[in-house]
Image (cartoon, rainbow, N blue to C red):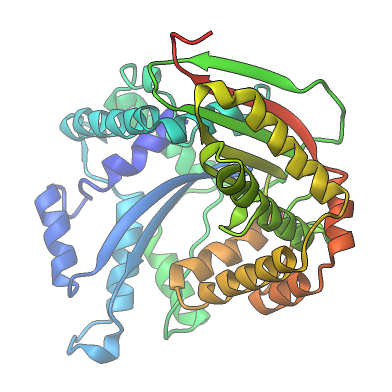
Length: 385
């Protein structure tokens, strides 16, 4: 995990033809200020490294060469022909980017809201790859050297699934020709993705209390919905999450934060690739038991079908609007389409909106009966009882 997370930081420092970082960045300026960056994130049990570039359409500039070709060639070289010395990554780049990665991980640890969210998942999925943070582990950084990282990179490049997306005024045939030339990788076979979700089992709710130097308690809960992106009930799970805590009109926000004044924030998130829903809230230390009780009441209320017409209709409208907004962003379109590759379930934005709009209150209540509270995680101060 840590080696893979470090790799794109090093790759962005230079390539075979542009080994100095300044050359690398100046070339982007030559491409009319093209944007280039990367993301490292988690989807299901997969750590995803995404290189992304946006470049101006050829018809808006007077260039003798295709900017699409030059852009894809740049991404291809960045990924497959990095700057090397003595047949491994440049030491100065690896050493510098190890510190960058360390700071990124420390930023997560120092942000106690993110830290609590990660720790809840870590406890909930203690025997599962999903417990791992996509940036890796801070204690693994010191042991990485340029030779080891380069060997790991070659193995990664030869075995990991690679998906190339282009959104723009072009054709599949044109892109395929460029990619075949620009992405030179020795690969034995094409590899795909496997989806995994915990089977429906019953176990005692796991409660974890962690003490750190914090002024505000962080109460997080992990729940298993047993519904994933590829399931027919996925639109229902989206509605369930929306009614529970996805929006300002949701039950957690209204009942836990507004009416009971027990939380500074209260919301929920749903990972459809793993079928896991998490609840996040910030509370006073003394309100722990009250907050747990009232959150459980919201879960029970949905299970019993106690969903108002306003909660149902506003949630449906919010989800539909979010899905429509996807069509306004090239990167959001790519992310949405990649869901199909990862899950094996083909969906379109319009079909998903239609499915969401057909979800009824009884259907949400039925899906709620499958939801299991798995883990309660509470981050609190060191001095309290």
